[in-house]
Image (tube, rainbow, N blue to C red; front, side, top):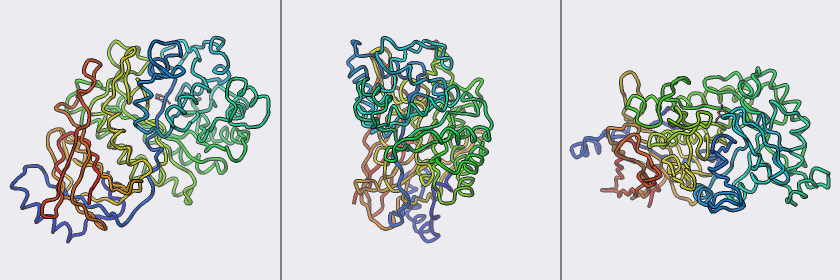
Length: 526
Ligand code: AHR
């Protein structure tokens, strides 16, 4: 993984030798491995698109109904049906965009079911997720209201699987037309004068699976047919996303990027982190041992190579880099919480999830030239969620805190970073790099550094050198806890939360001590 984090240079021999001297002097005072970190502040890379911090909300379990939407008549304080507590907390993450309505649900969603008076909307069965009734109370207008409340952008996923091209094209017209067409007027009649902004539109989801069990060749033809009829005024034309592959597959990226030459802005990709690597018996969200800690981290780090492999295919087929690579579903997937509906994918969230999130952020930063959007699965109550709710109670998960700590990286500019003497963290036959790091110059002009210590047993000591700038202190926050599965509960909602982290240079050298199993985000100060 480090070969991608160290995207520009390795440490020079001279610098390493110099650090080694300092290191020897320091070693007597500390038993923590001494790691060298070089940031090249004078060699800025590409911008880390803020959409890397995107979210995903599907009609699945209590992800939307209860978790976000309680309806305007609920006793739970809400704004036009959306929970004030949950929306208020999400706003602090500066959510850049939300993907909706699925997922697998998208390929069974018929948009006309979700417009007009709510009492008259048809009730359907959510066949993908628990076979429960879908009231259609949340439809297009409600979704865009949520987007407005969050100050986010919309990523709408169209139905290619069970819908028609006509239905998809009429949805786009309904949402984005400023004409006096019958569909645009229907939108007005339903309360929205101005067109909605649809900057991102996907044609189907997981076409290799729940979205139709297709070959990439068949999907590519259906995609080309569909986008030929997805017409909008030029100024409101969305970026069109083709639904791509998953896991170790690169064939979908290859076929789609070769055969679709028009109206394709990105190819999506999905990868879920499963502790055991097996769908049957994925592993528990809490109460796991160190073997499942390290296997989870090792499995999540595989995404780095998967992205690299897909980028290599794209670089061959699309050398001008017109096509983005959007990881629009990722995150941990565990055995569901005992006693919960297996179709609802509700799972607890621990310090391990925050470490997983931060490792992925660092991977996405390193690949920011192609990875211009990602969407964690999912925003509330489903899989690796930011927020869990129980009736009108709510808690912020460790994953939420990782997102909040990384906010300065949204729209920041990559800075090359090299790690020297990175100790391996090994357990049995599994080994991962002890440290993952990423640096960037944020929009506020400051240099930010993120650090993840994967080892649950040992702190790390980092000797920091910055080329092209000089710093005498680092201020930020650390997220860690006594146990690997530390979590928040409704009785103890603040058991794990970020704490202040400060360091000052001594004799012109800035040394940072990163605790075991920790995520740290710092601003460097002059
Ligand atoms: O995020 C849950 C499901 O995982 C999505 O609906 C689907 O696209 C994927 O298989």
